[in-house]
Length: 127
Image (cartoon, rainbow, N blue to C red; front, side):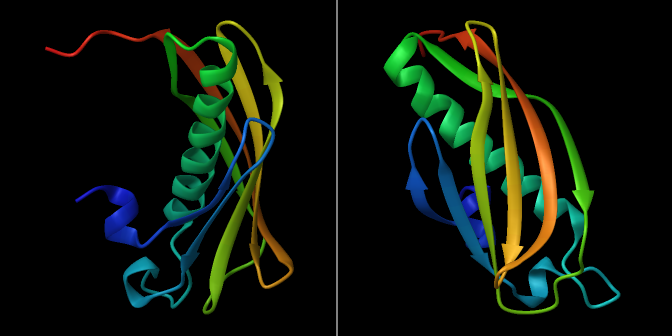
């Protein structure tokens, strides 16, 4: 089972210019104070950025894949219920590095924002 399956993260849209994913808020996502754990925001951000970055690579550098290099997340509002939706859009897509801005929302409220940097690696054959 993948992390996305385990957490219940659903893919809504994946393109080279925008990725949207969502997760229902459950008890498993909470920290002891009754709000969604900040790591969930970071997970959503890196997942959305990675999906978009790899979609971009399929179109521009098909022998490459993107993996996370750095993430900076600001938690703006607590989330206690409902659904969290992450929207990722590219800031820069280059031959070696990509940067994606990600915003998470609960209802229409912005709850966190992240900047995710990814490195494009030459794909290795699997044995």
